[in-house]
Amino acid sequence: MAIYDQKQLSVLINGYEISDWGAGADVLKLAFTTDSGSMKIGSNGTGVFVANNDRSATLTLKLKQHSRDNKFLNSLRLLQEGNLKAFTPLTLEMRDLLNEDLISATRGYFTKRPEVTRGSEANDTTWTIVFERANVNLEQGVA
Image (cartoon, rainbow, N blue to C red; front, side, top):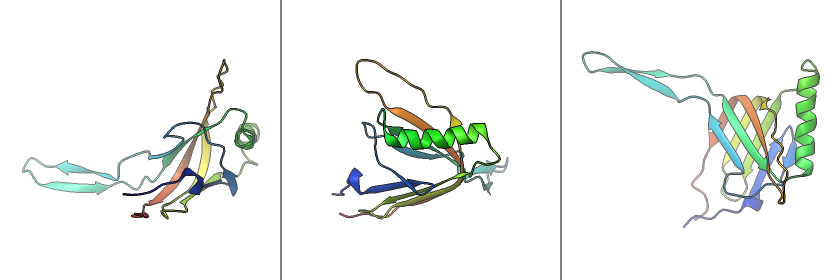
């Protein structure tokens, strides 16, 4: 049996700790943009594997409504939109302190403005950031 504790997850965007997560099992998701490569099969049935050097990835974060983390990310997004020349691309460092998984990414940009939903309950705010290069190192974890 493996163990996991959300409180043991450290997520840093440009060195700032993101910690005010929304509800659910999918509050953080990193997805590579493309597959690692493709196989081209010739008419004789033999193939050639073609590696894909695209290591870009999309990070999706879901944070609680009115979180200070939303304010931080929104200030970065406004800087990106208002003065791209002065904007420093985002970095990501995510560590599972319990199981030692490590995810890092560089040269990130906001690609989608957050949607705002209000009603009789609090709603999560979803942030989408695309990074030029991401690396994932998954460990066996504590059993």
